[in-house]
Amino acid sequence: MNNSIVIVGSGLAGYAVARELRKLNATIPVTLLSADHGGFYSKPMLSNALSTGKHPATLLNSNADQMRLQLKIDIRSNCSVTAIDSARNTVHLANGEKISYEQLVLAIGAEQIRLPLQGDAAEKIYTVNNLDDYQVFHSALTEKKHISIIGAGLIGCEFANDLATAGYHVHVVDISLEPLGRLLPPEAGAFFRHRLEAAGIVFHLNTSVQSVDQDAQKMRVTLKNGEIIESDLVLSAIGLKPNTELAHAAGLPVNRGIIVNRLLQTKISNIYALGDCAEVEGKVLPFVMPITHAAKALAATLTGNLTPVRYPAMPVMVKTASCATVVSPPEFNMPGEWQIEADENGAKALFINETGELTGFALLGAATIEKNSLTSRLPPILM
Image 1 (cartoon, one colour):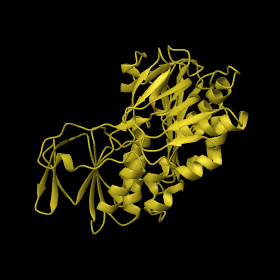
Image 2: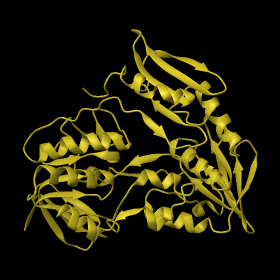
Image 3: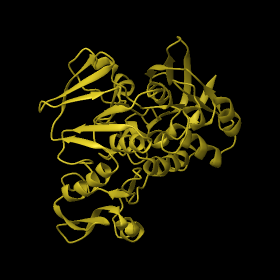
């Protein structure tokens, strides 16, 4: 049997393509292969579920059976793809089965990066990259109060704020001088830090974790600067690494992600990639809005209307209730400078390029009210 379109991955990207396909074509055969339970949930909700009172079980919007009926597609749960045979247009499954395709979509996401840390408890560090991970982490929080987080990036800060709001004592460690160091200029980062410190979060910046050891019922986190933090458990949130191994083994070019063109097409014309695993013209954008735009364009292409993806300016909302934050970072290494205004109520940072154009911004606190007006002045990410 030839499954016309096979989608590998049941995260936001995989299901977004399936939904968009069904809007355009109600009958084309679609098979979605999921390495886990195959249910649909909003992954961004994981990092603020505690403070919103959501139990892991309530985060699942629809299970695989419900999604199967809703989208009228074949969903294969707990179905791991081990190899792609592009010459024969088949994917190989862990159970030995082979599934054929006419068009293949890789929506295989990214994995949490793990640091090679010393200490006898290094293997007890938690990461959260999906609902199953979150269920384990949520259960581990029972009767715990002191949490250490490695990483003060987007996810680390969102989890820190969520845990602090829910009553936990939170320490955050990062090598940067300020939190959100890759997204905010230093002055805006300092404003953000002060707001989260006021919520009870303790930052240990410009240093790193050297070792994590078990000390009776506690975890002893030793930092490179000599500080020691006693914690009940440790969460690592230092960033994501696109899943490229499957594509690389199939002979597809990879760099930071699976390399695709504006049609989201790999070197092999009937294999596509989108979402956290994909690199589109040098850009890896692991956020919701790029996935939404990519899914719409790809669905059109898969149904015969070749449609290059276009990315407008897409500011990122940081889910930290203690400090409302919206950021649209300029391209890495773009020549220009930050212009910053800040007071006790908010901070506005505008990135102006060499020709005087606004190409990025960061808005915090009261300044977030300017999000829409500033977004309208930004150039598109991809025309």
